[in-house]
Structure formats: C-alpha cells, structure tokens
Amino acid sequence: MVFVGMDHGTTGVSFTILSSSQKEDENSSEHFKISREELSRGKVSAIQELSKRVDLDSIDLMVITYAMGDGLNAIKPLSKVKDRGILSINGAGKVTGGGTAVYEEIEKSGIPTLLIPGLHKKTPCINRRFAAAYSHHASAEKVSITYNAYLETGWENMVVSDISSNTVTMLVQNGKIIGAIDACIGAMGVIHGPLDLEMLRKIDEGKKTANECFSHAGAVKIAEIDASVSQAKDELLEMAQIGDDRAVLALDTMMMTIAMEIWGLIGIADKVDGIVLTGSMGSMKEPVNFFGLLKEYLEGVVPVVRIPPTSGSMGSAQIARDIYHGRKNILGINVEDYP
Image (cartoon, rainbow, N blue to C red; front, side):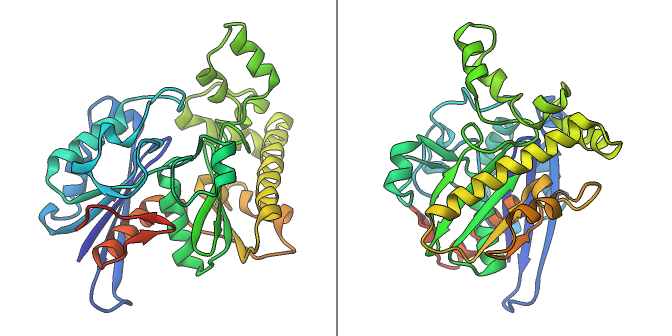
C-alpha cells in the first residue's frame, strides 16, 4: 500500500512516500523537496517529480497541507474544499505562488487527496480560551508535525515546537491539540518573528507593511542579514561559526524566546510527558548544535527529544495511512466526507 504526505512549508514543498505492507515492521519511506523558487518559476512539476518515484495509480491516499488552512475546520477531500481552505493569503509571509501551483496540480491529478485544516479560533479541538485570545494558532502542516511527534513518542501530553524560518509551538493534552502560539505573536524563527512596538510604529507611519516587518523580525533582524529566505539560514550559521557577535546573539536570543514560549505552555498544561523539537533548526546538531543548546534551556523537568525536519510530510503520510485504515479523528480534528 502506498500513502503520500505533503508539507507546504516556507522554503519549499516537501513530499513523503510511505509504503507499507500488512506487517507493521515492513514499512519504507522516501522524502523529497522542491524549493519554492523552482516552483514559482514554473520549471518543476510536483506531480512529475512524484511520478518519477512512485506509480501515481498505486497511491491509495494522499494528504496535503496548504497555507494557513484557516477556512477549514475538518480534514476533507479536495473536492469538498472551497477556496483551497484559506480565508486570505494576505499577511502570511512571502507569497511566491509555487504552493498554489502544486495544489492545482494535485487537484487535477485524480489522486485521492485529503486536505488538513490549520489551527485557528474555529478549530473544534482548540481550547476556548486560546480561541478567544488568538484568531490564528498554526498553519496546517503543524498538525502533521504534531501527529508525527505523537506517533514517534507515544506521548498523550506534550509540547511540540517547530523551529525553522519561523517558530510555532503546539500544546497537546490527552491526545488532542488544544492550542498553539503562532509565529507573529510568540518566539523568533530565522526569518519571521513577533511584531514589537517599533515595528507597529513603522506600520502606522506607512514606512513598512505588516508583512515586511513580520518577514524580518526573526534572527535575521539581530544578525543584520538581508538575504533571501532560502539563503538566510546558511548565512546566519556561517556568521555564527566564525564567531560573529551579531549572529551569536541572534541565535541565543532566538533560543531564549523559544524557551520562553515552551515554558509558557508547560505552565498552563495539566500534564506534560515531554518536549519535542523539530524543524530545520529545532532538530539541528551540525554545523551548530542548536538542538543541544536549546535543550539546555529546557531539560531538567521533562524529557526533551528531537524528530527530523521531514516530520511535516511524514506526518501527513502517516495521517493518510491511518485515515485509510479507518481513523476518523486526528489529534482532535475530525475527518469528514471520507470515504
């Protein structure tokens, strides 16, 4: 049996092909990623790349994510989804159009496909206090990431932090996602971060848009990096390795804000079995041991583990597999109109 998962991320669109047999120990997976720059230029077809690796007719079910997913409250087939499951693309970071092209390709492919919603104030599993405080909590791939963490650890109560271009942290209680802290209000990532008073003033004065501020509010702001999204992380790490004080301070400040965010969620949780770190930075040990350094901020009360940055697409593939085999609820999110 073949299941495919897709992660609609900031720097690219990732896929995992999960092949499984009747025996649980006979599973194999393959991952690949297409950069947003390649997709936006129209030089790469996601479906063609997928077909190079698997017979499309053999795919039993695909599960994908798209943007913030704030126009959707349940996991549904693409044919049942309006406006790609989003309310608006405004204010969501840099828009390249690459992800939209992939969505449309998949829609036309005939592959049975389900779409995962994001976490927002109308998501039924979100605690009413979180829903009252924040309109949006996390984009759709964070559900996939959290599901992968759930399967990998077996923890019913945990904090999952996805750290890469931005940082988003989820709180799971009794096997359900009850809240999350989104990138624009919480911790820093490499590119994105919270909007502070100085930025709000620039927006009010018409000097910058909210999107421009949000897209330069992470570690790049402190390290004074003005590179593209795809190059900023490498430049930051190169600067840190040669001891550039701006980069060292940027990484340490980024870790501090992430630790604050995680400890904040632990402080309101009934129980926490452990902390899961993931994302290109959260799971990183080389060339900078970001995971190890951040773990020092966090360890001592509960275990701290990492899962690979492929957790988004892998989680989507695992969701596809488990829904195909009859699961009707994923971390508190219902599956509707399938099969």
